[in-house]
Amino acid sequence: MSLSPSLDSYAAIGITILMVLVVIVAMLILAHFVGPSRHGPVKDSPYESGMPVSTDARRRFHIRFYIVAVLFMLFDVEVIFMWPWATVFHHAATTGATIPLETGGVAGKGFLLAGMGVFFALLLFGLLYEWKKGAFQWD
Amino acid sequence: MTSTTGYVLYLVFALGAAGLYYLLPRTGASKTAIGATLGVSALVGLFVLLGAHGSAQRRDEVYFYLFAATAILAAVRVITHPKPVYSAIYFVAVVIAVAALLLLQEAEFLAVALVIIYAGAILVTYLFVIMLAQQPGSPIYDRRTREPFLAVVVGFVLMAMIAGRAGELPARAAEKAILADGGRNPASTASLLTGNTMAIGAAVTTKYVVALELSGVLLLISMVGAIALSRKQITSDVIRSPRRTLGQIGKEVEPF
Image (cartoon, rainbow over all chains, first blue to last red; front, top):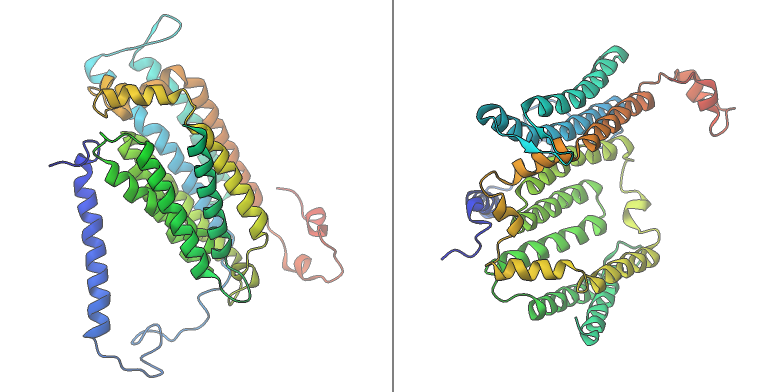
């Protein structure tokens, strides 16, 4: 019996999350009880067979990482706007469907393309500005 | 909602506020046990109230309580955990639980957008800010809440006011209509052929096309702002000079 009509199509995601949780907990429990527990200066270092640790991991980072994060966030939001547009535009372009406007006219694929075109041009201008200012330069 | 239920609801909120107050990180003796007991009893009380006044015919109520409890508990951990990186991870749990609640309301696009924007982009920004500002060790502002009492009072009074009025909103009638329809949202039933994402896309690109372009301008402004704030070169002798007072560097370095 289905418990939730609105969640049924997402059962796969739910099962994946549950499986991930079970695997994580099982691995932690197994490692705790089955794994050998030897301690020493080398065993306790972060990279047992790797390079020696030079500094503390909790140190301040360069501000330019922050630009990368902010720009990623901005373009992420941009993609969120494009996604619903893309589904509508694909539908309009393949079937010739139109959306009625409040003014009385209809919006076809040309209207949709122009609307997103202006939006995209604004963001493209921002991208070129960043490029010019050297935000992507990693020197 | 009767007035008695309203007062019981306010009582539950007061209980939750007291619980959260004791749970917030503090110096001195830890009162986590008291806070957890009060908080969990408030949560149980809230759910009992919701169950008594909710709609019995909804079959996905189990999921609602599961994800609502996950969201609330993870949100409490976001503000009570002394390590900021752990708080950020709990924030992801809040976002995923809220996304599941949105899925229960058949708002698929909003749910996925929430995960992509918040668990993706905003979290990355949070982590970068934490890394940029991190002091070695465990500083005092991570171990102690600055204004625990005022913060809790303001937050819970606001929440109680919103929750107390929620029963009187006109949306209640719409909800009843949805429930009479067998728990499906009539708005989404009408657009089932085209889908939730497409309905949003049609609205955004026609009726709200000006708002779409304005948000593009807003994104452009934030891009320019991010560059202007962080691409400024400050020579090391300006920073190290001991004679300069606070705010002096901003006057000496050329604006972007």
